[in-house]
Image (cartoon, rainbow over all chains, first blue to last red; front, side, top):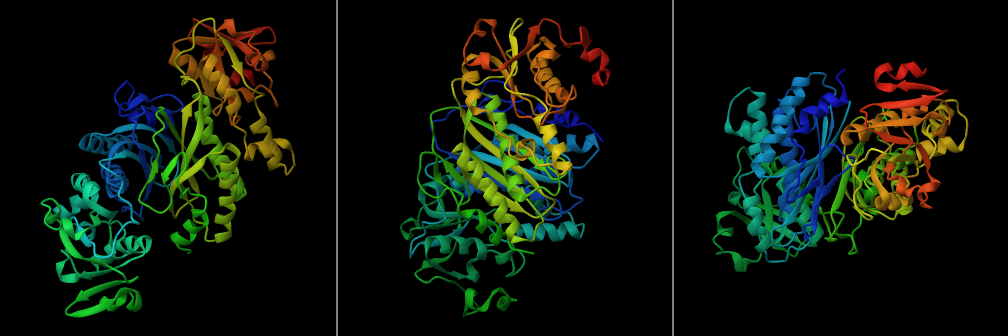
Length: 296
Length: 296
């Protein structure tokens, strides 16, 4: 066994320990102290677990990066930019080198999004990372529950890239999809204007159907989407696969010609029904009635 | 297997979902939104794991309560009162009743300290609870690094009660110590005046010697303590056992007659050396030189 303090020493240089705009007390005390920003705090957490959320022979740098990225995605979905994170790491590795590599992954994503690590805890057990993310709204928080009948539905990028990445990786193919699977990019640039113009938003982590379904359920509306307008990477199953970390948002048709929004993919519209209909090959398929398998 | 949503449904009523002083957006969205308090935020997290931090046949109510209490202890040690928490739960239980009982434990401690649950995540795996705690300073944050030579050292209660509780529980004895082991009380009442008068503070979670050692190391000082002045429950090993969740703080001798402080136990003083000396039976034992075993 290696000691907890040996592990913590790997991370210590990453944890803020000097006065700055965000962190008043960082590394080494009982708790971190975060400077009041006079803005509402947006907070979410995500647990990433070996075998469930990433393959068991993933590289430690990638495990760290991906665990943090997927947690940050919830902030983007709220129309919020990230400011700081804390990490609860459970690992049974006895190889100090593993922790050093894991730390590099943390450092890379901290630098990429200019965020601070304010604290953490380490315990012994099967690999699992609980990432706590904190941020502030760009303009206002975008909820899931505010989609209006007649709103257009947009996604910020193609679906299925995460799935393709995992398939390529399993086939030992090197591709940009593999890179994207382990180091997904979170569209904070898009989140900024979505925060201004959208009526509702969610990140596509569980698959478009389930995630758009959450918007519909929480807004008390339905949706009609055109399969042909959805950029997919593999096939129709991409609509239910997830792991893409694109955003799905709804927006008043008044904004259709908005330069920023017109760069995204308009895939359908919000309806007064309480179901998702998918138009494909001139057929209308009622997702709720027929179930997903009717697409296969 | 039971579904994640069935599990989440157990907790949903606990997560704030209406406007109040703290939570603007609670249950059901991508993230929680916490109202700006114009006060610096104090944040810590603690992972409690089965077999390591609680026995495997602990009751789910107790697992929830204890995991949250030990995390809150870090706020008390910073001179901060608790405001809200979030929980990352990993569990492989397939018994919905287990989650309902776990929820009762959460609810009990939320009510006891008047704090809000603002969010969480659930994943499948060996039982582990990552508890994130958030609060605000009563008066000012009390760091570990500010103990001064000549300061008196206080503890807020007897040591060894946690250890006695676990021993009693293993022997199937019913005692208040068992109750206290599973439902430790966090001394926020004391934290309030400590926040005003103390120079440094830590919670005694890892044992007095290690925790006072952290104050000494981070303040660049040493300590001399009188074993006879320390209220112990079992024996001298209580000084290194931990699990007590009392506070250890240092205070200028000017405050010796302060009514609040004089209720605590003065166990020694801060010295200019960089070691902890323990006086016992007219012997002076240098902890660093002799190691802990010299006490046995």
